[in-house]
Length: 260
Ligand SMILES: NC(=O)c1ccc[n+]([C@@H]2O[C@H](COP(=O)([O-])OP(=O)(O)OC[C@H]3O[C@@H](n4cnc5c(N)ncnc54)[C@H](OP(=O)(O)O)[C@@H]3O)[C@@H](O)[C@H]2O)c1
Image (tube, rainbow, N blue to C red; front, side, top):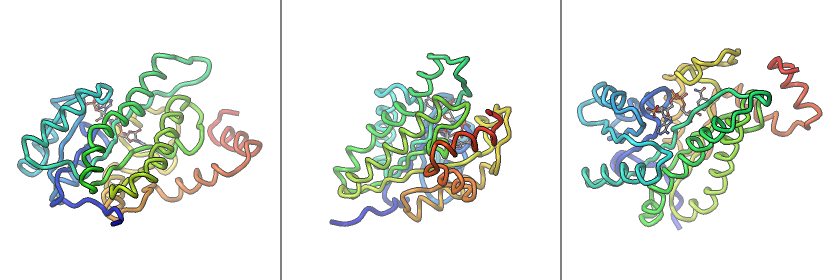
């Protein structure tokens, strides 16, 4: 049994969902500049066309789709594979959204929308590439979760729930994919300056630039460690919070975030 290894440009295409903005956009550009041909998926076709124009000629192929539509996302991936005659060797499942929430203003529609994009959307994209990778016994899949998935955080009722689910999903997949020759990675960023966080009206400790975040992701994926998390100090503080008892966790995080 050969152990899974990180994908390389000669193995096939890289595919990134959520490539029209923020982290996904920067990772698409960085991969394209380092020799990958990148399939870029998101809903906004205009943004994908602008992204393709910024990359070296032909290195980014727009493939617009809504990740909540399982058929559309599978079709987008298949179409590019057929057109190029190359398989998707690296899939970065990054599309996601965050809508700050609270118990008093609990909005079921907003909750459902976040579950649909962050969790079901990731599963839809996974279903589009995983069977072929298993059949080939090669490939690499990265799931973009968040340090907000380590524990339930304030103002993240839906977001923390979806990101915790993605962490569990990646951990569970690892047991099977390890034996199937397919590498699975879990990416857990802290705060990164993107249009998603530009909307936040609360302090964001250790806020990182999108360029630095992308560098960490691209390097981490090439190294092939299961989890890529950053900024280290912030991630380790939040990891430590996973093992502190509730009697300590709630007052500590509540005071630190002004929720107590
Ligand atoms: N920024 C942070 O601090 C941070 C921290 C931890 C984790 N993350 C995670 O990193 C990922 C990227 O976040 P970001 O900060 O780069 O956010 P962003 O700038 O808002 O980008 C989100 C991307 O997801 C796409 N997307 C949203 N809904 C979609 C849908 N239904 N179908 C297809 N694409 C969709 C958007 O494209 P369209 O609107 O064109 O569809 C966009 O390209 C998310 O999963 C987020 O949870 C971010």
